[in-house]
View 1 (cartoon, helix red, strand yellow):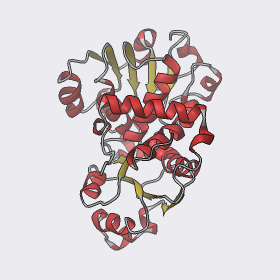
View 2 (cartoon, rainbow, N blue to C red):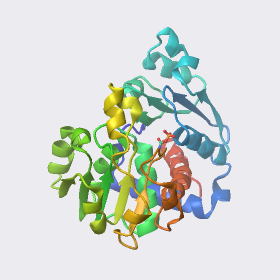
View 3 (cartoon, rainbow, N blue to C red):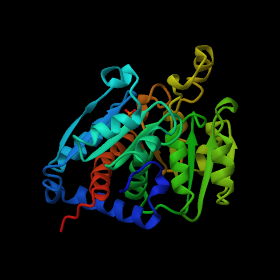
Length: 306
Ligand code: CP
């Protein structure tokens, strides 16, 4: 039984195969349109989502499978106090694979321990978001032609940003990767990422506050939103929310082949005028998220298409 709880659940070889499969799906989607005939994906979303839930559902539908699920805790028996362990043992009677998003860190892991079907962690609190990382890696690979030897700037809410934590976990395994961590003091990367991941893997990084100082040296800029839902204090959120705004003027400081990624949703951190810039890759990233989730579903269900 395979689950995807952390990006590290896949070895670099498995990741390479999965990304190659996603590229093959992009080139030849018709070949895969009956690969999951008779299979069902359940989406168990205890937290809001647009892309992650719908891209998993699109992925299963594109593979010929079926979908079911709930999109808020209130519309499930979680509202009556049911545990994720009991829920997943129930869902396994209806579905072959499940994608789960939950506000509490570790929830997908807890569910996976009792689950007779593969669990995909679709985001657990401020901890990890591995399918976003698969999306990010496919985007970087398609745009740059490689996953090694580059400088990646991650900007915004590095404290609570699960997409950033997962991306760093995945990228430290490639050679020649440097990180520039761009955040206000209050939203610095947590020590469990700085020390246990970056330092432990001898990955070079610097921490800066000003985006303008970092931009000229980056090959990838990964922008993130300051997440209102993770703040306990509204005043603190209001003080932080517009700390970074990437606009046309700042893009002039970047290399011609520096791509801008963002897991989305965006609020104000990328001005809409940047969307016209050919280096703005965040909507292409959304499309790649469907191909890579198709590849993930096939991999976890151990389905091979000749
Ligand atoms: N990137 C991402 O997780 O988006 P959603 O919150 O819309 O799923």
